[in-house]
Length: 324
Image 1 (spheres, rainbow, N blue to C red):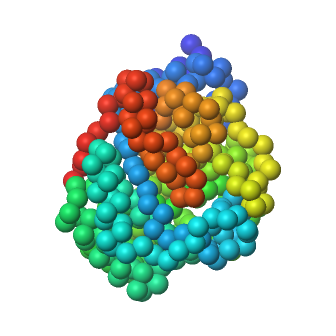
Image 2 (image 1 turned 45 degrees about the horizontal axis):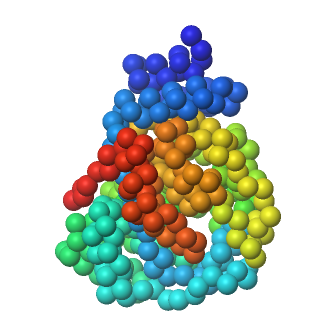
């Protein structure tokens, strides 16, 4: 029996926790065998359940951080839209459209390092309205928040907080220097302490190694993330990473499969950059992934939700309904 099959069986039969050494061995595994085994883990632990999320770019541009992949950083000239925090009316109207399309999870995303006191109060009011006027599960992605802010947001009805680690600690200073990997870890720990679920993942193709990707996934597992977005770099003209090489679909599928072995219980969520893959992520969905962000991303076009629903159903998935 191959190492892939042995490891898969230990995970499914014994609840075995994949180690770093195990994951490194999977780098040399036959890709077809690896992705099939990862898909089997997904099927056994999650059935064909599939989770859809949609996001709103609730405040765009003028960000103080210098993340080298990001169109919204004030350090670069990318032509990305710039506007202040959207009103509750604007966000609720957008959310109702997503609800009507059958998308059960909705995330408010704001550019910038953190939120001001007034920002938090406004977002809390927006969340209260979303909980009153829709059936959506509400997520927020707003940078480096503290415990007091999380307590306020949780009381307003927030259920999940998102903050991607983006890349592993070793490589992080090559991607961003205005905040640290440990800043992000601390924020996620604060969110958990406030009783929130967390969503955290990264961007593949920032110049990191496969070992970086594995080590980041292990950290995400240890943090207890229920959802892990796996993005592909969509190289934005005007950013320092605009000329990085395009990731192949096979490399991405190997990453997804290894992530399923490392964190078998998480929703592995294909996120930004699916258009780079050429098949909207179809191969990756059969390599262990079981969630996605649908419709537009922040400053780039995503995949239309109607197209996504048709795609995942054609692959045998059953999108789940509203959770709250």
